[in-house]
Image 1 (cartoon, rainbow, N blue to C red):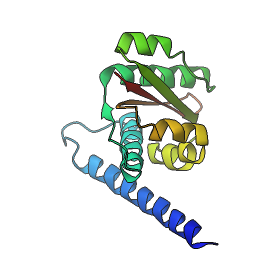
Image 2: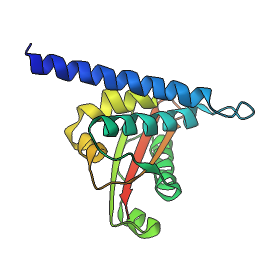
Image 3: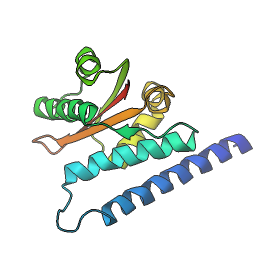
Image 4: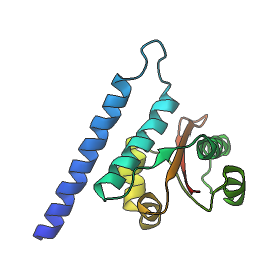
Length: 160
């Protein structure tokens, strides 16, 4: 193993640790009177892990956005209902959210939002391109469990 590879693995593990800590903090600061659902926790983990990766790669943090979140949640729900993975058309996202650019990552079978980011999307060049795209400024995340207990996740990126 070369020094470069060792340094890369160390950096990856450090990013993962930071994301786990960020997710734990999010859970601790949640309003005690309102417990977060597993679906909300999953989506929050996607958001925090994605932003941790972006910050670690000198990219601007993505802001949550209700419009792109709505599309991410709907996509995750459609995939879970049909128990299959597929992409949605991004034209409606562009029009309804007033965007000039949009992107989407989808996945299934990962037990947590952290796992889908760190074990799934970061290991896929095409998904990583969306996560690290310098032009994106907005992010919405959605997750749903199918009737058979499999998690389906979607993240929708946008730029105005």
